[in-house]
Amino acid sequence: MEHIMFKILIAAAVLAVATSAAPLPSLSASSAAAIAPRHHFVGRDATTVTELVCPPAAPIGGVVATRASSALDEEGRGPEKAADALLHTAWRAAAVGPQWVQFEAEDGNELAVSGFKLHAPNLRLLDAALQVVRADGSVEDVHAFRKGKAAVMYEAALGAPVRGAAFRVEVRTTRSGFPSLFEVQLNGALVSACTERAVLCGESATRGYFGYKQVGGRVLGVSSWSGKQARRPENAYNGRTSDWWQARSRTDQWVSVDLGATYTIDALRIKTLKNRFRNGELYALSDASETAEERLLVAFTKPQKAGYRTFPFNPPVQARYLKVRAIDTYKSWVGVREIRFRGVRTCVPPPPPPPPESEADPEPEPETEPKTEPESEPEPKTEPEPEPETEPEPETEPETETEPEPETEPQQPEPTRGPWSDPELQELPNEWRFKVELDE
Image (cartoon, rainbow, N blue to C red):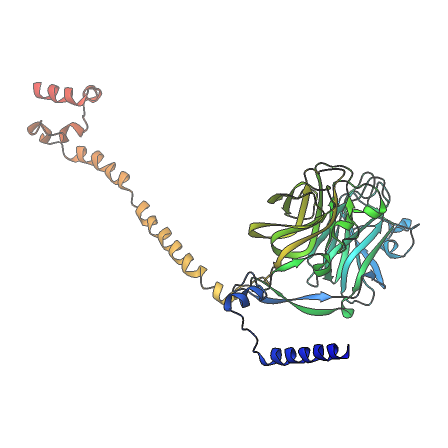
């Protein structure tokens, strides 16, 4: 037995020496290219943009509401009531129509808001929007929404932190009465607690699959929901495949997603339950509203088996808001575990600077000069009065020249134009005047 083990050890040692001495085979160019990482969208416009990286979203402390478009202050319904952490007090506007309350940090710091929650009376808020107030005073919509008829609370998460000097909640329409808010809570952090990071975007950035874990974002809405807490709509885009969104029908169901930023996308990657998704479509939405315009990107058919399936399309499109629609299923209600996409972050270049005033001023001057010159030229053309000069001439000529010049030249048309002293001849035609004169 020991002899056999000794032979095995000797054979292993010889094999190890031969392997170490032999050179490794070199890869061919085609083999090396096959295993090399693939970089897509290799182009010319690669650039780096900065974005905020903030701590996990939490209620921002020290936020006060000091301004409003209008308020019933005499009834204790001022704007400060919308940020006093009390649900039995409320801000109420003093007029109908779009009315707003402004929220800002008490110490004047900028805010990085990634979500919000509000409580409002049932009839006092229907259509509304969260707005950001920039440092230059400009106001821009961040998230427009419509609160349910019976709901008192509305909550939404934004795709990425939004930086602003202040934020407003604008109530645009109500079901009845003046706009009113019980409480508004801004989630996020102070900008001083955030850091900036560089993000490579553009065609030269490496394309890859991404989802909630990579870029964040949120579910905008769904067509229906089964009502089970473990099958909520946000499960379709939360970075996990252990849960899923379940609709309440097996035909014509959809889920819309906000990526938080604009991406150049050329494929959909979706994971569903077995038999829970058959024919589908992917749309790009113009905005996050319920009336957004839809653009069909790809129509596809998913196999019965569960798991991820990729559906590419060409040409790539730039989009932030996307909608996945399930036309039908093989069996049971629609069920989606996770939605992902393939693409690259799209660069948003800053607006070009305005042209300097010195260059713009001399341009209109030569344009005005030639305009004034032709206006003065036609004036002398209209000033000469040829008509009044010719009119007095025939009146003075017959008075001074009464010689029989028209009699000696009856064939010429000039005598026919002269006046006649005899009123009877003046009433006759020119041809008859010649005849009468010759007869005389």
